Length: 139
Image 1 (cartoon, one colour):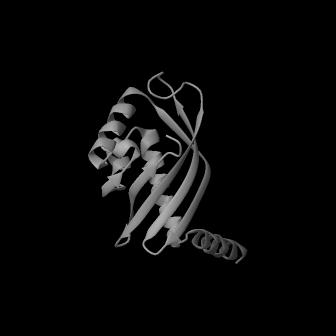
Image 2 (cartoon, helix red, strand yellow):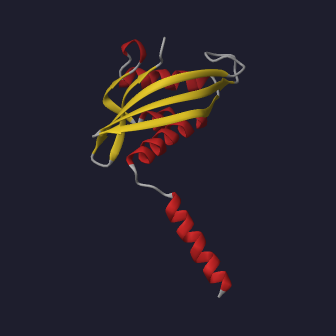
Image 3 (cartoon, one colour):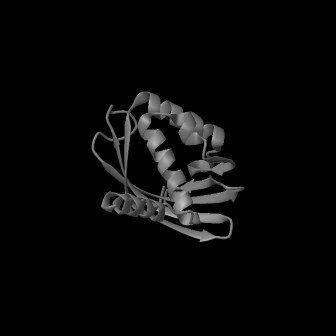
């Protein structure tokens, strides 16, 4: 009987941890992209990009995908999320992240860690959140 109570309690605890709040949905989508980049999977990372995506220097979705492919072909990228805040306004989400980026091949990223901040804007289409804009403050 005691094992059953513990098992049921564990299931309820896991269900309580799973949230369908929009903020958590955006964070999960971001985490999936982060994990894909670390695995070197540019195609999966780019799946979250909205067709209207705009990045630094006017980068569109196709250019962003090519940039990811080229970067991930040259080096292994590590991403540690230092800070992650999401605010929801209707069907838009505004995310501010601070990341620690590392590269191991001496390519585009420094060999040591580089802390970077990004502002992301997501839009909800149906049940999916798609990245519409990514900007790096000051650059």
